[in-house]
Length: 160
Image (tube, rainbow, N blue to C red; front, side, top):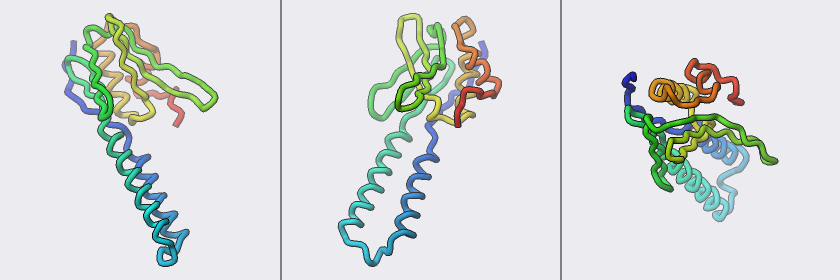
């Protein structure tokens, strides 16, 4: 098996930054700050603090890939780890419901332990790193054909 470098993969941060920038621009251009009541200023400040705390929580979620396995680390919740030698299958699946479609990349080991990540939260470069690690470290595992395409840098299932 090939040795891989230890990688820490964090979620995309640009959606939160975009929300904060748009939020600030809307209030700066749409409202005259001198004529705004103090209660509205407190609501604006509170919602900005809420978005900042949410950004902090989400930015602490990460996936760690190294020679031994894949680890999902969450700020809220527990850490899940799967060893490469125990991974028996990895699939990417859609779950379509009346709210929209949810994308999920699931790893299952020989003991029935599962690790599930949402690929939409990560960049294409990060997904390619994960797919290449899975291909090199789990040659005997049952892999979804989309994971092979991910390792090649093709994203046919990626909506946006």
